[in-house]
Length: 86
Picture 1: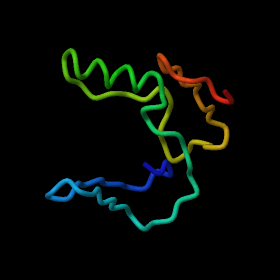
Picture 2: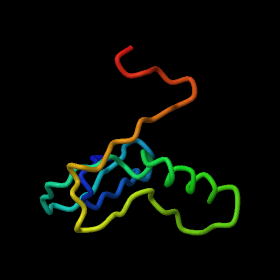
Picture 3: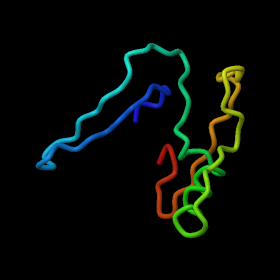
């Protein structure tokens, strides 16, 4: 939800009138787009729902030695979506 790689959990209330968001309080300086923004990961999630269920893999190395400022942000293409700046 917040994109800074803290642990997050979204839980609806029993009567579905609200969503509660729980997250860790550890501060991080890593801010990265969500895994669903990664084209390879997104395709793997879709495949998981239609074929043999195996873990999805991101299209980049997700490790402690990554220079997050140099990781490119992918361009999202959503059918019927509006282009940025329009």
